[in-house]
Image (tube, rainbow, N blue to C red; front, side, top):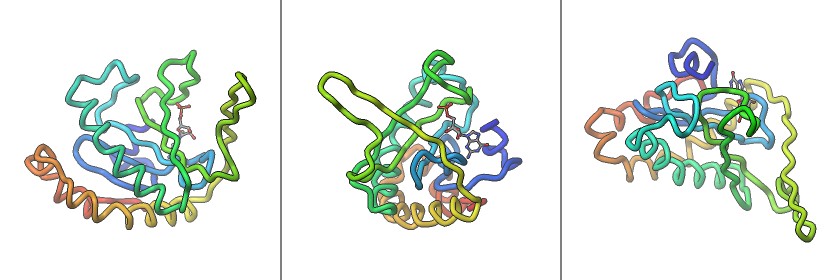
Length: 168
Ligand code: 5GP
């Protein structure tokens, strides 16, 4: 399913893309601004990634989280991933969820030793997703240009990084 987004055959509000990683808005956000980050290669779960693929996706998370936090004026960003059916994974193409959190609307609540993590999927229109993707991209432009890694530069994804963004 996410491979169709990678291939440009399915619509998506793209936040970032290069040869190895793609970030786009979740179509059922648990909070406005909910972003998914995936490897462009099809891998079902995190243990299917080799070290280079894992590093390529993970190293993009800090800049994406910072841009998301700034674009949504959030107090925090929760990052999680469900790997395996028993964990609740529903799309079997490995992905990280990046969710902006505001202090007055927490995702996780603690009451003594009871910790509850409650996610409610909401509907968002393509126009809303596109607007948020555009805002996040605007915050991303600077740091990604400055921190483009050698691998990305060598593979031409600095060129393709932001100017190659489509669909949002
Ligand atoms: P999982 O439950 O596997 O951790 O998360 C799958 C996520 O993908 C869900 O949050 C769901 O809303 C999102 N999702 C499912 N299908 C699509 C789609 O076609 N496009 C986008 N942008 N997100 C999707």
